[in-house]
Amino acid sequence: MTHAGLAVHQWSYKVLRTGERIVFELGVFADEFEHPYLLNLSQETLTDILVAHLGRFPHARIAWNTRVTGLVQDDHAVTISAEGPDGERTLRAGRVVGADGAHSVVRRAVGLGFTGLTWEDRLVVTDLRFDLSTLGHAGASFQIDPEHGALIGELDRSGGLWRYTYAESRSLPEETVIDRMPAVFKAVLPEGSDPGLTRWSAYRVHERAADRFRAGRVLLAGDAAHVTNPSSALGLAGGLLDSFVLAEALAAVIEDGASGQLLGSYAEARLRAFLDMASPLSSDSMRLALHRDDPTRLEAEVEHYRQVTGDRDRLREYLLLSRDLETRSLL
Ligand SMILES: Cc1cc2nc3c(=O)[nH]c(=O)nc-3n(C[C@H](O)[C@H](O)[C@H](O)COP(=O)(O)OP(=O)(O)OC[C@H]3O[C@@H](n4cnc5c(N)ncnc54)[C@H](O)[C@@H]3O)c2cc1C
View 1 (cartoon, rainbow, N blue to C red):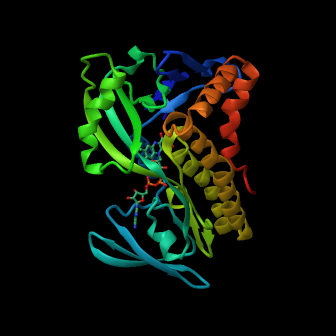
View 2: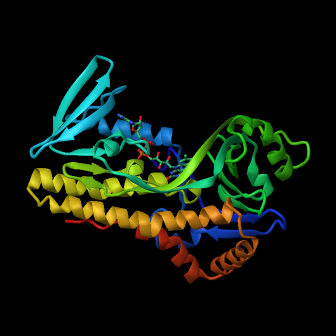
View 3: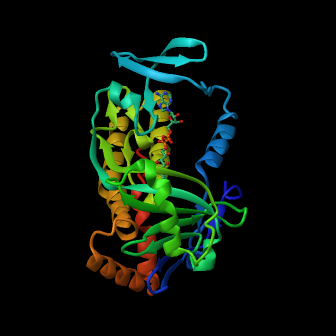
């Protein structure tokens, strides 16, 4: 996986108006961590890797182009209805994990709500053939500015393909995002530059969690269970952390006869990790980089990060915050 992605050894906050760079050097922990870098890896590439790994397990089957339409459960099993290339089908399973994304049919079928908020801004995600390192951005970077805040990242090893994500009010019409885009780039790129736009999309962003991550024999994981804004890149990461602990707990219950309580523990621990850590951390980042509703707070936070990067112990503590998102083995 390391070879498929782009290792990023520096992460930076660049203050647009002054040009100041606050740099988080990840390499200073080379003696402590096996992988002291961020790995920028597209979700498409990650999916290819996962499918290839799954192919090594003879009992694993992927039903491509098949859509779960509903499910019911009784004391013994879950009955799933699905529609695929050969029409409708029914499956019975002892346990079901709903990992079917934010609009989860599984979550709805078991009657769980998805509580939280939707940010007032929409995010506009653009992929640019423009080397943003020439403007002082590291491979993972926040552009700090009350007006032109952005999340910036280099996408792959091709050299020069970057993602530039900015926010705009959802009160502006979605159909005219593209009409407003030239002014956005004009404000931040050198005069006369072509941003090299290759693709773009606009998203609503949410902080939401299912009421519970377990309903009887049905478990939830990933975006089906929780969604957060992408500024801290904790969405997919949170789902992976769910899967590590859930896979182990499920195997123990199904294969080794461990108590079903383990699955309840999974559900509680992962809900707490989201509510107490992932969503608050991401929301702080969103306010710092994209949702600039308080300029005084913005300056105070910039000063805070100046100090963090100037002190190895504080930097270490800060970088390790995301460790608290993990749930230790429940066995
Ligand atoms: C703009 C943006 C940027 C992001 N950047 C990052 C980032 O940098 N880092 C990060 O960690 N996260 C990021 N995220 C979040 C990340 O994309 C999600 O957290 C992640 O995709 C969730 O994975 P998932 O497998 O749970 O759900 P999904 O990726 O939504 O996958 C759900 C799967 O279920 C399938 N499915 C849906 N309904 C059904 C059904 N009824 N029957 C059968 N199958 C079904 C879908 O086809 C899909 O394959 C970003 C999100 C956005 C919007």
